[in-house]
Length: 238
Image (cartoon, rainbow, N blue to C red; front, top):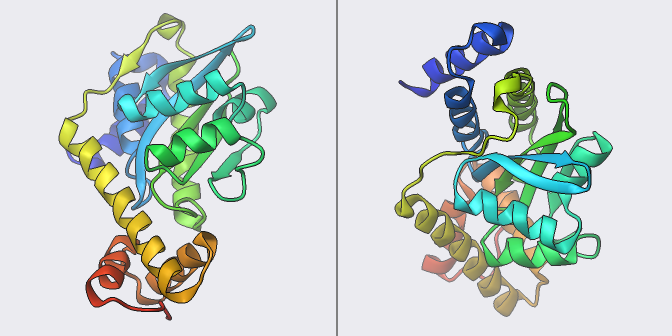
């Protein structure tokens, strides 16, 4: 089943959730689709609050679960804030470092620099869907945000099904996919450090330069990072 067919099935089930024969399977597909809402999206999960306890009933892979748990263990994070306050929350590893120091450290260590968390309206318990990205500003563009909100509406409808309460639903993922995500994150870090060393830039400025050229040339930020390391560029200009 291709991506278009998966979306068609998910949208149909969300329109009539009682007709879905296996909502758990559809939720697994939903978080898989979450990993594709932006070029740099790498993991997707759902956070639920039960009293004073947080847990992750649906997750795309171990990376998503680890990132959620890092927030629960540190006592706060974007997924918790979105579920608790029922408001959208975008996380940036640079600007939110002071607000979520424990989670920021864990995210950077796992190659994650941004996330978008959206509250879910369907479940009885406060919940949010979270998508994690390997670069800053991964979800700033209009299209990723629109797709994330559409996915949140679909997941909200499915999670209203009572038989899903308390279930843990994980999507099997190959070690190769996790390793590839980690390799992409290392590539960005190395390019940032090269620019910082050659141009006396801060890490934030180095990332801004990478993003500026990526958007101007309509190329992946990873391709731009390859250029920096291969050509030994001292700066990245549009």
